[in-house]
Structure formats: structure tokens, C-alpha cells
Length: 572
Image 1 (cartoon, rainbow, N blue to C red):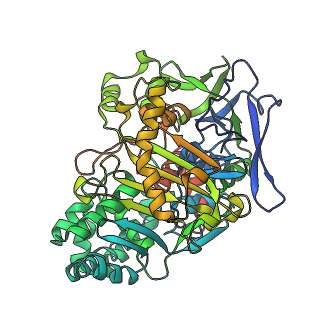
Image 2: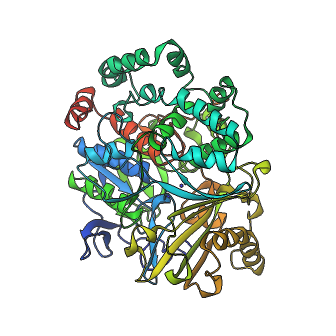
């Protein structure tokens, strides 16, 4: 939803940088064909202590932004507080088990052209590819029963007929018939073409107007009218189609929540239509990156460095420096000042970015808006390493458990997501073993944990209590042969873990902005030369969304001519 070296830094303290020199990082090939990120702990700061653009944080959004800036021949420097890059998409290793800590449900890595996934477009621009294993299903455990849910246009109908009703089948078909034609309009404007100034009229408007008009013409009057709702809540499309079947409404709420942290009444229709196009059209598939989610991070770092970009680890930004009303650089915890000649880009959340700014330079209206923006709740995590013989032979990679539809998919302790990536990428675990990551997706209340002493017995007791729902879900998914007592690795992460090691305010998943009621902030700020990217900015939460946000900021910092040349170079 999201790699630490040799110890589980996700659960253990990180070393402070103090006055030690910052550490550079490079990507190296390993003997098994995978790649790993290596840091030189004794190397001085990589290059001069200034750059055209300084990027705070190395999440997917920050790395996409930095990579494209390097591709645009800008001198870019990424400053990462932790010992390895990736943010919520990092992976870590312990006892030979390699774990994802965040995103595990991917698609679109192999897609090319204007309708490609935004992350796929960035990787294409950087000349990077990610080997993937393809699959087309996940197990779901619902109050109605458990079944293997397949993506694609037809297979899900069989599940609906068996576990829901004939009416559900009819309503699902009605929904697909209405929204799949809209996907041409939703995908006619490549995210990589967007920028945050009037140059967008050239890079997006004039360039893609013919294809956009063609898609509207192909949809006909009724479809074109529906496409006008792409920037409205998806529930409005469902309401206009008079979809009332409880299973269909619940299922769509679940998909929306997994995609963006809000239900169908809060997600933009464009996001859902894009997802439906990737999951429910003929020939579609899901993809898991071989060697884990860390391979995505490694590819972005490698692509950035290929074009001269730099990244410095263990470089904790303490504040954004504002001089004469403009962001001119950052000050590190070590006391070093890093100058940004053109811009500072923050990949931190909006709340954490606000805390990096001198209070006297922040307009009250901007501060008030940030502080009033509602937050998604936080996470509980369960990471396990165990013997593969404890599970059935046909174990799938993904499992979703919903305990009670009536409580809502956004209720705490209700929905559990489980990923067993070693099913598709066996190198993530020692021979004959599996790795597993289970989590409560942005539904764990932070206030339950606020102020607790992490060393106290009360904290340990609460972790045991609040993680039990994940243990039960894992036991249900893996079957009677699995025993929690026989796990070789057992690690539980709490919202305090999320807050501390991902530098996330209140350990939040991101902003809980509902479409139609409010809008997600853009990428510029009231402070000239300070920009933001990531899940606190448009388009919002999710890997494709944060990749798009990073690309939009990078595009906005170069000329229209440079931007257009890149679009030409990658064929979009």
C-alpha cells in the first residue's frame, strides 16, 4: 500500500546521522541476476552540497520525480532519512527472508504507450524494465463464502452466480458495459503529459485532443455524458445505473478502498474506471515484480543514477530553508546545509512537510487547510517466515479476508490483506520456505496507540491483542497445516512503527479526501520554489497515483520543449 539492511529496521531504531558524513548509494548486480542497493558507509557526501533540485524522501513519488529530472538533465539530489530508499515501498531482509513492507498488488509494468500505467511510463523514460511474474486471481474470504476471484471480463460472473445472486450477475454486467467504454476517455490523457502550468495546454491539451475527441465520439452521446462524471465520486455512476445489489455495492467499496483508502462514495470515478480497464478487460493480468517490491525501488534508483542523479542515505532533513520568501535548500540533522538552486520537492506527507517549514513563512490559510484535511488511519503489520510444507501446494500469492460487510470495509479489525510473494518469486525465502505479509490496510486507529511507551508491557499486550485478527486470517488462508508456533520469523508492526520508521504523521495511510466534497491538494505551495509530490497530492493514494504525482512535478520544473521531447522519445 508499500528495504532495510540485515536487520528489521521497520521495527528497530535507526542510527542517527549525527555529524557523520552522508552515505551514497549505488545499484549493483548480484550473482542470481537480481539487484541490490549498496551503500558506502565511509564515503563522503556524493558530490557537491548543492543541486538544481533537492528531493526530500525516496518513496515511489520522490524517486519518479528525481528520475525524470535526471532524465531532463537536471542536477538532482534525493535525501533519504533511512539507510535504504523506498519509503513505504521498501523491502527488508531478516534470517534470509526478504519481506515487502507495503505495496504488493501491481499491474501495468509491461504496458507501453499513452495508456500505460504511470509507473510503467516513468520506467520506460528511464530505460528500465522490471521482470515480473503474471497471474490472474486472488483468494477472497467473505461472509458469503470463500472463492478464487479471477480478473478478466467473464470469470467473475461465475463467482457472482454461485456466491451472490443472478441479480448480482446482471448488475455487474450492467456496470462493466457502462464504464469500460469510459476507459478510453479516462486513459486518453497520459499522466506523463501533465504539468502544473499553462504549458499543459501544449503537452496534454493540443497533443492529445484528437484522441480524446475520438474516444468521446466512439462512446456515443450516452457514453460521453457518462464520461463527464469521471471527476465525480464513483458511487454517482453506480447510483445512475440503479445498482442496488448488496454484494455488488460491497465489492466495489472493497476495490475502491484497496485502491485509494476511501469507499466508492469518496473515490474519483476516473481512478476506478482506470482500475476496471486494467483488471476486467480481455487479456488483462496482474504482475508481481520478481525479487519483490524492492526491485521497483532499485530500478528507479538505477534509472536516476544512469542519468547523473544522486541519492544520499542516512540524511535526515530537519527543516526546509526559506530565504527572501523562497525555498532555497534544506538543513540536515547533522547541521549541513544543502542548497537547491531551482527547487525543493518534498515527498513527505503534507503534515510532515508543514512541520519542516519555519512557522513564520507559512500562510495561515495554507496551514489551516493542511491541519483540517482528514487522515486515513494507520496500519497493523504481520511479517512471517515459515516452512512451505505447512501449507497447501496450490497456495496463491494474495488473500483478502472480509469479516463483516455490515461494519464497512473501512472499519477497524474488519479487512485483512495477505500476500505470500515467495509463491511467485521463490528467491524471497530460503529454499523450501515462504515469506508472508499480512496487514490491516489503513484502518487501525492511531489514537489507541498514541503516547504509549514502546518498551512497556501494555504496548506488547496491545500488539498481541490487535494482531490476533491477522493471525486468524492467516490461519484461515494457509489451512490447518500452518502453525504460528513453528514460524521462524514473527514480527508485528503497529501504528507507532509506521509513524516512527516511515516518518508518517500519526502513521497515516494518507489524506482521506472524498471526491465531490473536497479536492486533493496540487503540487505547488504558497512558498515559491517548494513543491510536493506523493500521496498527499493529486492524484492521491496508490502506486500509480504517486508515480503520476512525481512525474507532474518533474515536468513542471522544465521547459515545454524538454517535456515534449521526452514524450516523443518514449512514443506517447
